[in-house]
Image 1 (tube, rainbow, N blue to C red):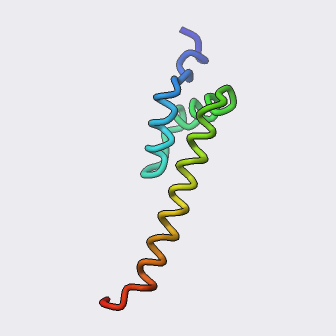
Image 2 (cartoon, one colour; image 1 turned 90 degrees about the vertical axis):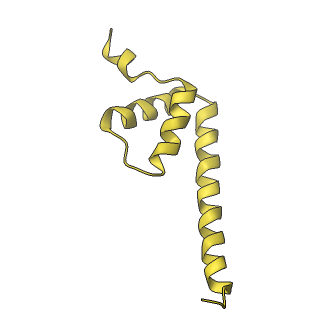
Length: 72
């Protein structure tokens, strides 16, 4: 088994790493494997952008909810 094979990830595995990265720092080998996958794949960077867009929208929603909450 080559070193590159150890870093190869499927799109499903890459998507799971994108989601996991929202909650924790990835291990070095997972971060590198994700980076390599993103360079080779056309679909997964789109998924990553969607996750980042949702994260930003949720952040705005949370801050707007706090600003308009008069019961607190």
